[in-house]
Image 1 (cartoon, rainbow, N blue to C red):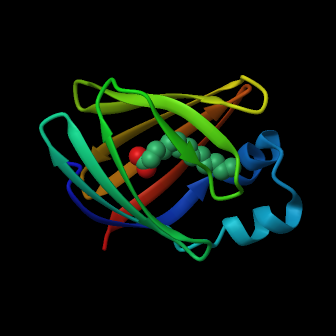
Image 2 (image 1 turned 60 degrees about the horizontal axis):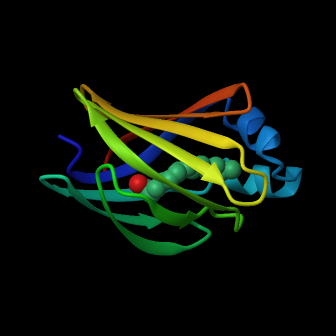
Length: 131
Ligand code: MYR
C-alpha cells in the first residue's frame, strides 16, 4: 500500500512545526516549497525509501522495529525506528542534540499518503499524492 512514488501536495501547520523544531524563518519559507518526493518500496518488514527535494537527494533503508540514524534536511540528527500498527507506520525518533522526541506516522487514505509529525506539543501534516 505504501509502495510507489509520492509527491507532496500540501502542508498543514508545517510552518509552526518547523518553528518549534528551531528552524529559522528563511529555511522555513524554503522548506514549505521543497517539492519533496518520496519513493517507498516495502518488502516484508524491510523498507527502501528514496527522498528527493530542493535540498537534497538520499536513500534510506530500514527494518521495522530496528533503530537507525537519519539527518533531517536542516542537518538535525535523529535516531529511532518505524513500526507498523495495522495500516499505520509509526515512527519514534529522538533528536541527538537535545534528547527530545519527534513522532511521525504515515498512512495511505484513498489516493493520498498522509504523514503526520509531532514535536514538543506541535502537530503538523504533509499530504502526498501519487506522482
Ligand atoms: C523515512 O522513512 O523517510 C526516513 C525516516 C524519517 C524519520 C523522521 C522524519 C521526520 C522528519 C521531520 C522533518 C522536520 C523538519 C524540521
